[in-house]
Length: 225
Image 1 (tube, rainbow, N blue to C red):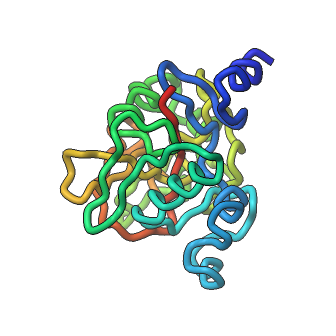
Image 2: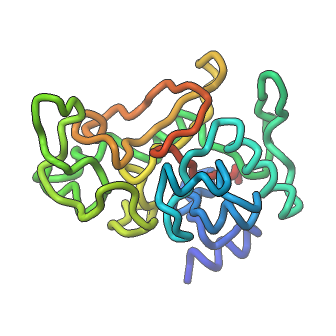
Image 3: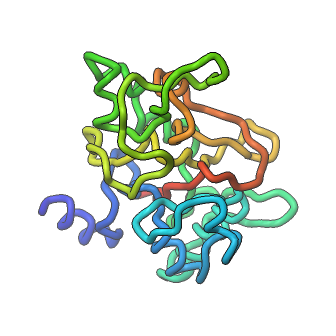
């Protein structure tokens, strides 16, 4: 009740939580949320060849530019200031109040020291995250977590326990686009996906990427208070 009352007082959507100076989307953006704003999933009818089609699943196959377009479109839909000027090189509008991607520093502050830093046993990871749990062999560079999470690929959002802030899937499910001014082109993700295991869940989850979408890349929106 407190979270809902606070969200109402701040005129922010109740599907998020307030953490410090940020409103943060409680889950990764779902396919239903994406379609409500953009009309269809990335790749249109071809999406089903790359990822599960289910409204409760996180949207994937999202390119960096599409993530910015979605954030702007949702802001416009709700009468908020857009956060990105798009073009040959997108720029972030300083002090914007609309929806945006978290910065690298913001995401890392939300995620804390790493999933395993809070667990007594790495096998507990599957309580909190949908990671690569398909086994470990000589060709398997990702090194799977030592437990079974029940999903071969992405899972419906909020299928696993939330963290102390009430956020789901910061670790696991899909990796999330972040805004990083230090990277030429601003292409980077945070968070291990269902395709990654111990190497990324143990701590640093930052990855530089190309701008294109992937079956294990989605997004989570934030807003500055």
